[in-house]
Image 1 (spheres, rainbow, N blue to C red):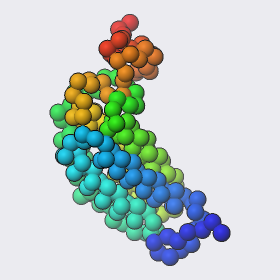
Image 2 (cartoon, helix red, strand yellow):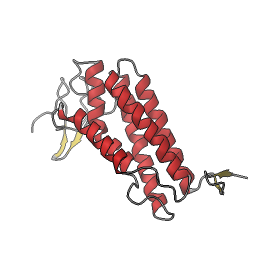
Image 3 (tube, rainbow, N blue to C red):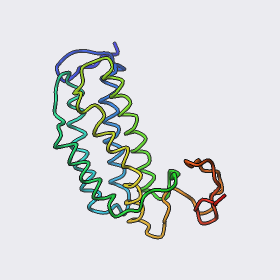
Length: 193
């Protein structure tokens, strides 16, 4: 009881590290589906995320078959180039962003969290079993690390007047900043000390 078959026919426990890794990659894929389904997501973002969904299927397949290598530099470089293109039009982040803002931004926040978990699960697997060493966590790392700007891209397209996705204009809770906690003003910007 409690076993499942890998892509090579091997039976493993359902909570094995390998099943956890590819299962969590599958969760990322589902979370990106929620982002795509959010109202107002721009066509170029939908197209990008759908391509990434296909790549996540490939990554899941790679993880489901020990010794299989599907993800290569072409995939990773393609993700990097696309995300760099999206990021080029955005100003640098100066503050942490609270999850939320609108449906698209909130869905991106959830996808980012699941993506980071997939990365951790893949690294955990790599410490005990053979995993394509050049790709361990790379696609999920790129997605998770660039997600705040992608959330901003989705947010600004859905709600252009919303300048700080995820931050309520009435929020007065302290926000942890690199230089220490600060409060937010009524318009959502950090108070200066």
